[in-house]
Length: 172
Image 1 (cartoon, rainbow, N blue to C red):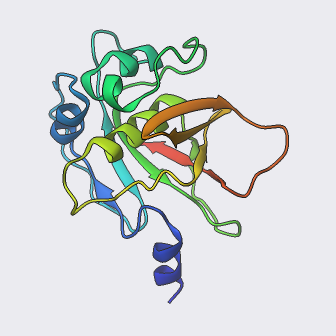
Image 2: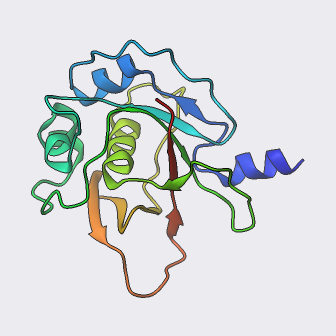
């Protein structure tokens, strides 16, 4: 019964997996990854964060990719602290009293931005629909949707009930 409550409370519902091929195709970034697709666990979103030309990818890279140009507000500042290593990531919104295992940490901003772009750009209605109503608290910033585009902001000084803490775990 607790599992059903957790599934209903998650904006990811029962969860979804976007393979390296799907993630790269939606973002418009070439895919070189051949790792196996991770198994889905309830309430999680699994995405592949693609590698472009460097071992890390930044907000600027995401702004310039085809889906980023369409679904992301442009020129959102510097890339300070927004780099992330390519690979498969699990994303999870923990409940206030939910115990989280080792390896989970605040999601890097780039991972949250890539996930929101993928959810907005995905033409498949069978997967998750991102309503954009809540903001995701990441590593030092919040990532939301404004006017149908992904927007990154500094974290507000006071807590807001529409901001949900997003955790990530790099799989491989």
